[in-house]
Image 1 (tube, helix red, strand yellow):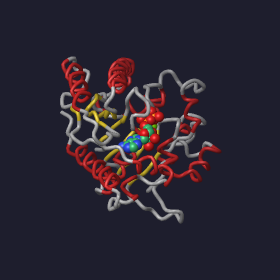
Image 2 (cartoon, helix red, strand yellow):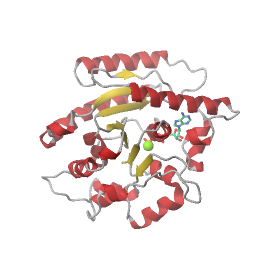
Image 3 (cartoon, protein in one colour):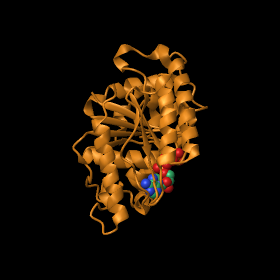
Image 4 (cartoon, helix red, strand yellow):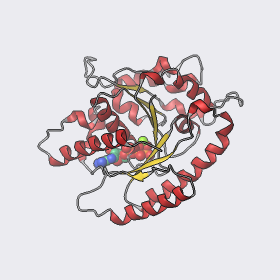
Length: 297
Ligand SMILES: Nc1ncnc2c1ncn2[C@@H]1O[C@H](COP(=O)(O)OP(=O)(O)OP(=O)(O)O)[C@@H](O)[C@H]1O
Ligand SMILES: [Mg+2]
């Protein structure tokens, strides 16, 4: 069965998209079959992996975007999967095994304009369609915006694990705290739509520190995060095996450049002469291995 993981924090800009794209790339390099679902209307992961030209073609018509399973409603998620999404300019796959369900800016309409069937919320529509393809994957990853509104709910409802990207600052800790509160409310609201086959509702399983600059000591923010996590575990609002991951992703210019190049960082060159570049590739690899090893109990 596929492991379904949402990356989310109520704090924006902490590195959700960059961590999910680069971890997905490492998982695919390790031979895993990975589906990345972009559930953020900003479309950052989609633009990054498809590059602008291919993404523009979807954005201009809406055909192929995740929102098309809701409006006009004729598409199935299985129709939207872009197989082996990372390609060179001639369409040759560069990273077999990494597929994408893309989004475009029209996903914002799910929040207000879309009037669905109240007996079948949008996250249930998404979940039922995902169930038809999840057997094709080892990992299904959901890139979420910094909230649990309708688009994000699709990922949170379908996921069984939640990872929280964080920077070593107070705002990330506040974002984590708010996330756990909103998650609890969403699980209460959606409980009547769950059945035994879905597995348990997703809990926070891991905190990932990201974009750590050289010479910055993260022991204090890490300790504060650990204390908060312990409180949530005691209150049964985080997974029993939830922990701060040992893997820490360092700050590196190549992460910002990778979007412009339309490539995940591990494909840009792990053997670079620039130590910051090879360090960050090895951080993403370690994180991917740690995620593989992490077994929620
Ligand atoms: N390890 C890193 N080193 C350097 N820059 C990074 C690193 N991780 C992320 N960034 C940069 O930080 C910015 C925010 O990252 P990203 O878009 O991944 O965050 P996000 O949490 O997905 O944001 P949003 O809440 O808007 O979706 C981007 O410019 C990204 O390139
Ligand atoms: Mg993002």
